View 1 (cartoon, chains in turn yellow, blue):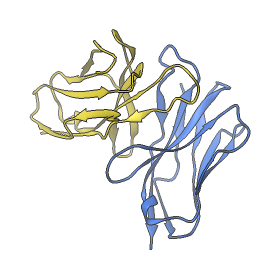
View 2 (tube, rainbow over the protein chains, first blue to last red; view 1 turned 135 degrees about the vertical axis):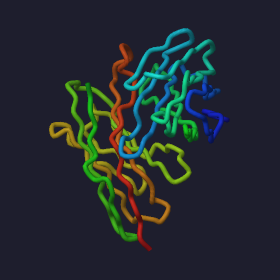
View 3 (cartoon, one colour; view 1 turned 180 degrees about the horizontal axis):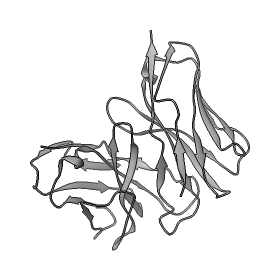
View 4 (cartoon, each protein chain N blue to C red; view 1 turned 90 degrees about the vertical axis):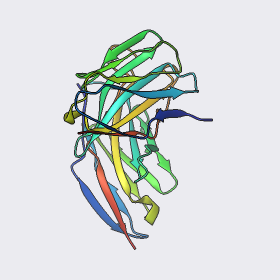
Length: 114
Length: 118
């Protein structure tokens, strides 16, 4: 099982450039989410989705865009990269229904904006 | 909104000894999940242990156990017989039982960096 796959693992962008971080899961999970991890801040929720066609904002959504056209994929778009978006980004997915539904994380993308 | 606090930015332990990582949280809900995640240098987030708030019994997974004090809103992680491979960042996280209105999210603490000394 591939689980949650994020690409790329590393990326360097120039200020103002745009890019898309890819996230795919093969577990048929309804819930997918994007977090950013900054030193001393823990993980903070950017955007999330509870199913295809449904997305909503998390704690720190500014500067990011998402869409969910399929159950499997949940890309995160940086519209105009800023140095403040230098961070490690994690995608996570899980089932919504049932008890004890564990969240599965991708391996993260380290993004540097110069 | 729920918050999770980890008051120890860094901890260290000697190999084979026991260490306890602290976590407190704030919520008005009565039913929820609590988690401890481990993040080694590889960056991978690994679920260590999970506790359901409606269960009085503390969760245990091999050398890892929790002390869940619901009234005090405390959820500490005890690592027994510490091994070099336990060195990592440890994150405490909260999740509501509700499945609507954005309540599905994990709320993380800021993490505790654990060093294991040989």
